[in-house]
Length: 535
Length: 76
Image (cartoon, chains in turn brown, blue):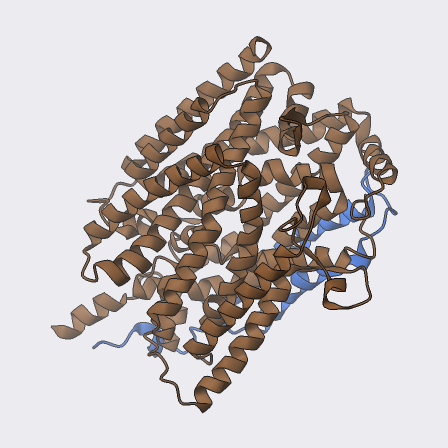
């Protein structure tokens, strides 16, 4: 531990400075009171282009991503690079969808995706299913942020659970106090640190390793020497469809996650979102370069830290920094990863708390809850969510969270017909959507259950690449399980809608109007319209 | 009830022929035969890696054009 003392000091100082900012954030653009979900959970819905860029960027490109994506390239090669097309495709894909969501949410004061489904399809049941799906998909994601911090602490030789618990307790305290303003303010520091570290890393490290030629050369050599069929320095005939469907499926899933929606709804107007869709790919460039750290680790001969006989691939990047950088700069790099975990963890816990408050508490427990009661419930729920995440990581093998997050991507996709298609059409019947959701979830689970991965000793839930051979096709081609499950979902939703219409099953009332999907800043909200109408 | 201003203003739509441009950065990065090769290299990067990084520029350019053109059309 003593050889890491400089790193630990730098890491701790930066971590504490940022935590201080988290508490001060409550006073940033302070409203009269923070006691409503609009203020606590969405930062007053007033963030401009820059704040939104840092906030959403810090939200989507998490510490776990920065640690896990290079680990994927380190282990399997080209298939891990799917994260790049994924984050290129996602913005043009959702460009027009998100502004519709922002508008209708602005008019109706919606906070969560389930709020929208509730209003659009008039079905508390469907809204509850969407909310639960969001909660289940988000929880392991929060837990995984801890894995990012843990990887850094491990490399610095810090052992035991206490540092992790302290880090999350600080996070919980300032999120409780400042709400979404805390991660928004911290995101500035986090992203600046990450940009600096990565710029230095991609110039300095390859130079020390003999240039990019030798970095890629080492990767090529490694994968040509391994017998595994799925890896390689380029894609092969079997995994190209998986690469494409995983990138597209993940791109479609990204903005269905409740925490992404939280970041988007906190924007001031439609222009902020459009500008961000054009500017957020700057982070994709960062991600693509970070991914290549995995190959640099191969070239540098890095071996992941082994604990209890299991190699932890997530320690590859911290190990690389430790070996390549002077101690003080390695400390800065670790702080970037550690702080990088705090921003998304805060936003995710706020999003999960809002889901609980709006779509469970207010819908089923206390219908006449005031704004202040909603905020109070959300604040406590955000604490519960974080305690849960810490317990899951400490008590259960982190591999469990990684598996759950894999499942999370597949299940969040099953909300696409209700949320994304719902923004465009009211054609679907609520019964059809519920049936489609159930079918998609079942199909996704069955497929994931049947994916084995000998590399991590999993007979089931071993990955997301589903071999088409299991459907009786004579081929080695694999496809992203979530993508196939979504197809099942849509087909059943269409069939279910036709059947429900034919059987004249009662449909829900649509509380939204076509013009509300184009509303912008300054347009009256529904309750304001009603107030002015009653006088 | 007052009528929301958006209903009095038919120009307020998201429709624009420029929106079709968004399909380009969605489709191109998903065609693996375009980039699944080692040569030609750029600064030591195999095609697979540098071309996919270059698609970022494609994405930024098209979304920026769609944003600008959409703003022009609606006069805002």
